[in-house]
Image 1: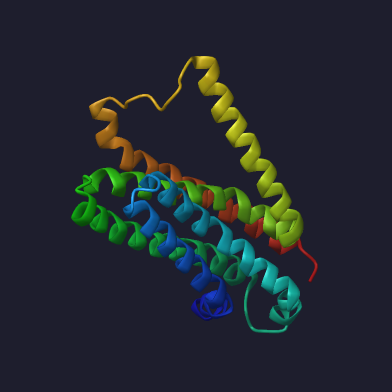
Image 2: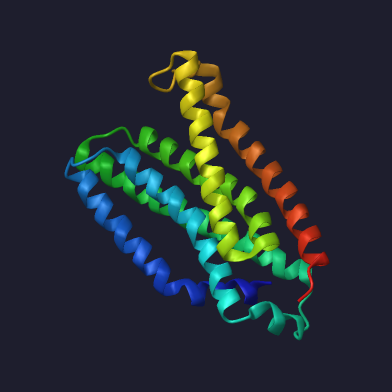
Length: 211
């Protein structure tokens, strides 16, 4: 499975370099005060979510599934490698957030905890989206999966925005201190459960798929 992850990383290296260059550009603009760090952390979530889609697109272009079927690789390993790739990208995104929070603290005198917490929440949101996205990619492929992902994002945005309007919120309400303390643990628990369920669904889909 590690070899499959390395394959994806090598295939994605040019795309990843482009995302990192864009992230650096946004970081410079955020440090210059052009916009807040929230846009930067949102871009990190996008980075976490979009690269797995690219890996499926490259696999389809090279007809990797048919080649993989001839290799001594179990389908469990192929599915697991995509989830391991998503987790690795999430870890890289978390490291980038950690570096950017340090820069905001040194150069902008911004509380590092605020930037770090917002950024890690965005990384977790990207991984949660992957838990929805990966089964769709295994089922429908990269092109249809991308369209369905856009539809899911649109529905989530409309529900969140519309729900906030109906409840009269113009901004996120302040969390109670006790909930703020437990928030990372709650988020981690939800994330682990979502990825586990998603992995089982993807494995069931891929086992039934004709290659």
